[in-house]
Length: 135
Ligand code: 5GP
Ligand code: ZN
Image (cartoon, rainbow, N blue to C red; front, top):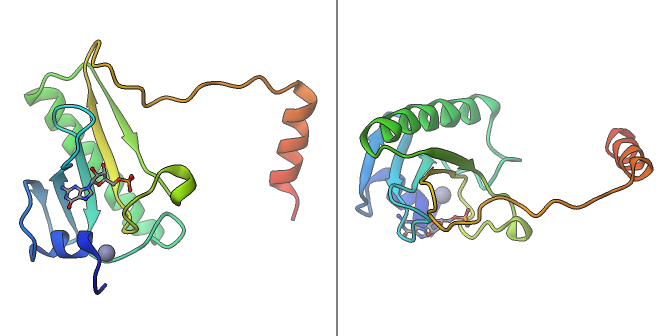
């Protein structure tokens, strides 16, 4: 897509620190990493987000994320790893080309990627379930 930075990176038009590439995906190091090794799985085709990406491509991105995660565990010796995928500004998406974050985690790395839990009542949870399930 014209003007999309991740399309240009995924196609190789803009250089990147690539750690994996195949016909459909490129995996690059994030320019503003949360931790050492933070990478982004980019489909080479343009899809804005989870709502646009075909299931097959989503499954492919997950498989590539798994492969890269296994490599990082071996080579970087990370203690854990987060897969993160943001959709929409409200969820923190800043680049509107689907990407899967692969974030190696290290003991005491100082990052806060998890959420702060809230405390709905059992009745509120039932109401939320019903709202999601209603046609
Ligand atoms: P989002 O917030 O949309 O889920 O994540 C976008 C990510 O892309 C951010 O972590 C940001 O650091 C990274 N990023 C933005 N522009 C570039 C770029 O030009 N090159 C690379 N390698 N990463 C980028
Ligand atoms: Zn794009």
